[in-house]
Length: 592
Ligand code: GCB
Image 1 (cartoon, rainbow, N blue to C red):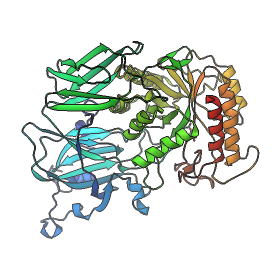
Image 2 (image 1 turned 90 degrees about the vertical axis):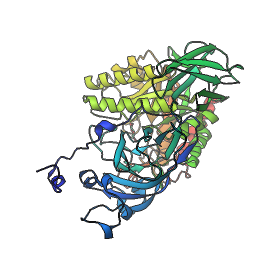
Image 3 (image 1 turned 45 degrees about the vertical axis):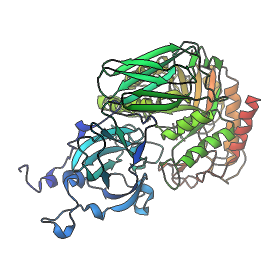
């Protein structure tokens, strides 16, 4: 078979993408930093590609000549794709696409008027589930792995004046070597489900800026750290009138710069979520953000926010919506935070992957504390170095995106991963990577119980600041006495947060005693759990599993029918179950 054999692709059993080396990651990510972007949303054309023909047949190389003018037949016709909105999840656009897992080819025409000389152009993707390859005018300009983190692809060289054909192949297969892997307890939505935007930048720009309180400075020193687009020497100016009257200068050497100054900005806390306007300029570029300054540390069994002990009481939440799936509208994000506050929560765990960036922005504004995590979930392939690189990259993309959000106090590096040697090494390194990238937050993971000792005894704990514990005594296990026994057998040397606990209840299904799937047992479950947890001094947080019922194909009893029913509110996001009221009363009693 020769390279120009038109049938070569038919014999290629094990088709591999030729573009893997073009993957972008955290190093390329550009923080939007308040710059104006041009949305590339609106209707795109989508062709689902069950057999991976797109890559085999090089659909990206096809032009948009109408079929009447084709010299040879083709299997792909740009115009024949279905018009679909971007952002969206394909699963909810047509009934027969509901369970589709595979590749989808999105196409749109991108009009382009060149800007001033030296201008650089970057495409910003909020999220593509779960892998993406981006083609501009037939050329692959980059790819990305990971459903829930943003990525930036520079297209300065590839974009042309006039219309440009932009194609994105998005692929959402569940695979053992991915992060997350094939076995998950949420719905595997696919598609370009967060916005696509175009960013015009000057020749040299600020790729990333981090602003915060210097850890350990007792609220008396602040820092600014900048990473420029290129390894240049330059200067940046920081203008932050409510932090310091006079602007400061940062010397950038080989693309990096950092200053620390003595200052005592008004601090951020849930009770008083003060934000400061910070503008950083360098050459032609301007980066701006609203920054909350706060310190979060642990001492013994305590979690201290600005020096004050804190009990995290709250709830977990998935990104899931009956109508639009994983797309998070601003309304939906507002509803999540409003419901959390109505519950009396000061804390949300964003399970089990990075949520839309609106969440942390809004949490900064209204004063809710967040646990943000990457989908190192259950038994991913801990022994595979490529899987580790993927997980670390997703983590660093999340850190880059949200490093300036005061509300984010915990980086979660994993959820319920069995304590094997390979997992220990993987997670130890991931925790170290999080700490090195961001010393201003606490590192955690949702751990499992050591079944042999029946105790909290995870080898990873020594690398965490806060031990997360998922436990379901009274639901998957007969009753809450198991939790009491577990607590009696454990002597953790640092704070523990119950990172999940809950019971399924079908809204409207009532009963007495331990009758599974009833609202009544769910409510009683929380009463019993809360009582034990609040009687244990080293447990410093409690996150109910979870705010809303969410889609999960693993759940197929008559009560579940494709939903995990552990929500305090049903999937309509309106119908509150009894447990909502009960937990809300317990939380409020605590803060009285
Ligand atoms: C867990 C998992 C979570 C599940 C939950 C459940 O421990 O961390 O993802 O959805 O249990 O409902 O079983």
